[in-house]
Length: 172
Image (tube, rainbow, N blue to C red):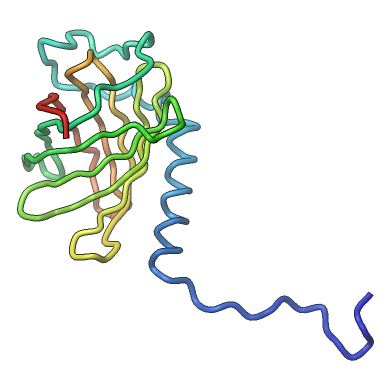
């Protein structure tokens, strides 16, 4: 029991830093994706590629080929973009991956994902210029060891669902 002259109020905390905000946003997105990301895929149609004619997750996939992938995507108002993404397995965890995107003219994003039943569900943040600019989620359907197809959404209010196709290029 505290002495009579002390209150039971919580100590004051400093305002959240952008790092703490990023962690909160990433944790929230990660939880949303883990709970419903794979189910959402049933409502999204992908553009087909020869590697995945029926866009069905390959549920037998237990790991993803690490390295650098080329990406081509379609975003808001059907704008197209391209870039690369590096995907590396997190040490000591069999189904967790760290991702880093380089898109267009210097846009950089980082994320973490869980591979489950042929779907890599990822929460990401845009860190272009060293600041947290945006956050979102993407679910990649693993077609085979060289191709994935994704559907993404950002937290921006005017964001539309976008798509990405990934093709393995090389080891990092």
